[in-house]
Image 1: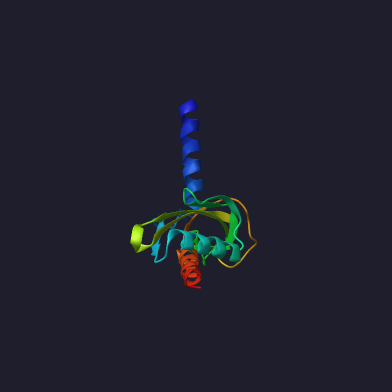
Image 2: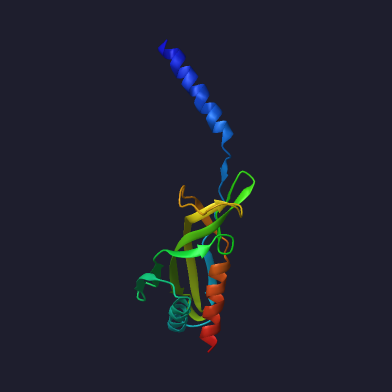
Length: 160
């Protein structure tokens, strides 16, 4: 009798799982890397100014090691964050992003900047209908726009 109950339970769980739509996670891109044609000090100052202009909350700033780490800050899903889809419906709402920036001199060629971003949903819904919900939390991938915009601002500030 006991084996029969386990079998029935497994069949019920299988049927329930078949009713839900699968979550399809976005493909995670590699870290964003680019070079700025300026000295380390000029790039560092421009980077700090660009982050201040964007009002990004910073957790750690270490110029000697070339590392800047942020606290979580919100960003719209679809603009800077791709949070995947449930079935055929894209997730919409707000994501939380945390980033770490690594800066190092590459000699006379300028300064290399690498941005690692980690994102997850904060409040989302399936498609454009319904209320935003905090749970479940889904991993998100960067669209690369925020990183590109930041480095464009750094390049512009270096020229000032």
